[in-house]
Image (spheres, rainbow, N blue to C red):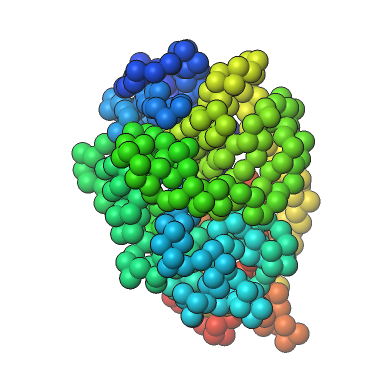
Length: 543
């Protein structure tokens, strides 16, 4: 999934209390017999990262030269409670799931059941994109490298926040989503294409994506605790609680069930299991614990780690000049770039309350896993680069300070943009219609229906297939309202703007996020609603 980044930093007595618990519960859980000198001072660095980014719990794994050098837990599973994070604590790995989906397809390529360049319609005859040409030409390979022509995160509202749609229903919506770019012309991150990839696995094998990765990947690798749904958690399980900043205050939030988009981001794992995954990746598909047995062939490994979609190489922000490289691309389920002259194969992941990093430097046989239970990617970025620097013998860089400064700047820039928009608002303007006239049922071609109803003199917006998307609507200016989601952890308030026909009736309604920091999976801008029934007809609903 996406990387949800909310990075303001403040201090309250309550935060200082749980932070004291974090620092008191640094748990060195396991260090195997190997050279740990490059990470010998990791504990103090972790304490600083957790303090700076306010992360309750982190787990780290380091693999070097075919051995697990270190797996270790830090902090607590839930802020304010004593249960420590250890090497078996489960975290949502979010979009690091994508590499597992690519590997699942790679296994099928090895077995001759599919080919990377098979048309998707060969295996999913009902698969359809907006453009018939793209439908015909889209291949299995295209599903895994973010070059479908869809805009960034387009269609994510079909599953995020958790919706009632099935995987097939999500993919049915693709035919109604207009492309933002030419097919194969540009990189734009797409979760829906990985949902489609998972359904190819299901169609070819007769088994669900979930069962296939359990039987063909988790099982052979000995990833005994790893699974594909938070619905499998039971009371007392060793699971990290997700945390997020909610209106500036860090708090525990509910687990997010995204089973209907599982192939894009639903795996939950721990550093003990993930170290096995990383060892197999660095061994080009060979399972080190099983002699010469392979998960997939070396040929498949090379294909997944080869550039499929080129990316630009922008100059890094101030303080992060060490990140400057000469190439950047996306492979099959993996990002590819350069760090200090070395090829890096990596991915990040983000869900509400969890962000993660898997970072591989193949030419020195180094693998790093960082799992966290707070939406602060500055923490995993700083930790990952610190460990890499130590093994590369690079000069010290103050990664924590650099990422923290970047976080603060992004937050300040976004606040300034929101403030400027607010200052230019015409607060004296009035809606064109009586407020009740905006109530009604509206329909978007790919999402389906939403409902706007009068409830206690307030317009309330509901996405019919997404229980969490319920917002109170406040008049902003003219025919634009501000949708304020009742679930404040969503951090995704949006403007809702109505357009009128010449006869004064509503012809359409559009939405855009208010803050530039709104996660791209809230792709409100891709929606175009028209009245499903006459506006005002639902005004008496939901009294």
